[in-house]
Image 1: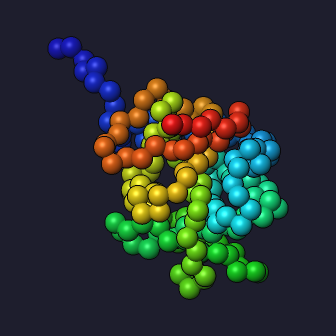
Image 2 (image 1 turned 60 degrees about the horizontal axis):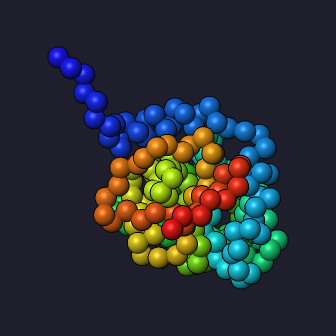
Length: 186
């Protein structure tokens, strides 16, 4: 019998991407991407949908700090429910994000709501066409469909793979920001 040569499905790609990402962490990553804040050309006063990184994710914390210095406002995602887009909330002074759905640090539901004008997107992998491989819950896909705002993937350069299977409804990223800089798509 001849072994199958069909490409891996999304579930297998997620497993492979998670394993690979474990090897990519760099102590200077957050500082490396923060250097590119101005080059993202996010206007002063914009509401940027950020996120609190999971332990092995590409961490945008210093980038978010720099965007605040440049006059942007930051809102954090909250899982509102299965099958729903993410909700975004501003962080009140003195408050901190707390573990919520799936153990992800998120805002409380009564904190001030905000509608991002730009979205930073975590991911497991991306390809040269700007497609991203998410975690499988569809939260960012639904959110991007509703918001229709610029989407900037935050990743380690080594998370790039040759091709990501996609459906007609899948939206590409507008940019990817890695420790090597910004790549614009489209």
